[in-house]
Image (cartoon, rainbow, N blue to C red; front, side, top):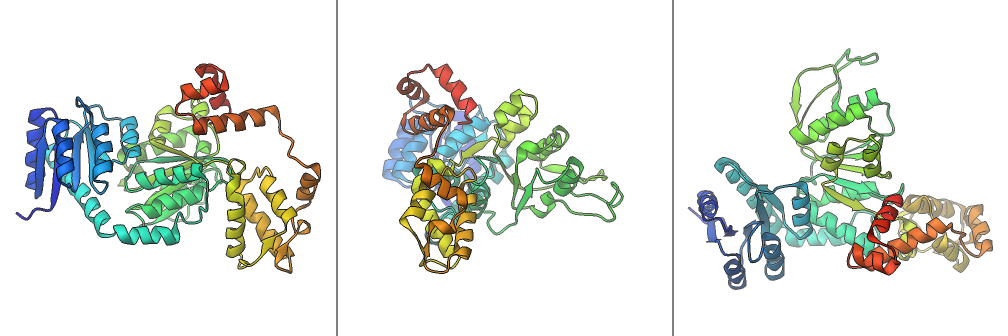
Length: 440
């Protein structure tokens, strides 16, 4: 049999290691197997492997440490973590550190073979198009996510790491921060990029209409259902569905959504036929879902399903370094790339609090372009509130706004929450309450 890929297998349980080795060799992999993770790390220094299967719980170094060493020595290696303690938290931690996926023990021989094939297909595709993807990223970048902000870049880096997987993603951030763009970015970076990306606003429809919108209905299911209709999950099959304002979903519909996430199946409204679907789910909210869970307004089990990976986009007022860049981006989008803002107008725009965030900024620039006739946008081309704001000389902030911004800055640079609490001269419990209060 032709060797398809070289695999580094590490598991300190001899019987499991032997079983996995036999399975991987049966699908054409060349396997270097170890029960000692230290010896496996030595092998990494001497040889490059296409794929790594590492047990999570090992000593004296565990699977996450071996993953870190692999990314340092052989970043092109696709790593899978195997664990008998599988959980969403484990998967998230592994993916944060660069793992492609994780495999929960115990597993059947045939299931492992199918999983190995999926991993191999991913690695082969990644290897074949690595240079092309990098070129596309330079041109397409993050879609329309234009940023110099380290905080946003960190979010985009995480999005890139988890994009190839099928794990659910919860996007948080104020209205207008770019959650839809981030969802599209994740889809484009995934192996589902050529499949449909389907969006639905959960707040735009009443409960019965939203259920029909998501799952479809059959003729006569309710008043007005004059013919069969496919739902958004049907349209998104094989691709990604983006559910915005997920906090607005009713408790009854939450249960049905949980079923789709757990079993990948649903029924149309008014129909008893169970349908299977393969859809990656990305959700977004500008509300505090944890608080809604505590208040009994959102199912805890659904929250943890959706919250497998949580990405939070900062508001524009916390990434003011992006404002001049975004202004130029929106000018170019309007076909006015040679336009510029007067010093006064740019000062007002840079200091403005932007409660509507990037979306509000784009609307203001579009308005200014329509009103201006020359190449310079002046204060007169901006809404009246900007003139009022500039005359005031500063943005009057409440004590809560000042406190929140200060905590955000400290959290950004502190190595952990204990250090942040120490810098702020408060105890960790108080910091936890303030983070919850300000949705940080």
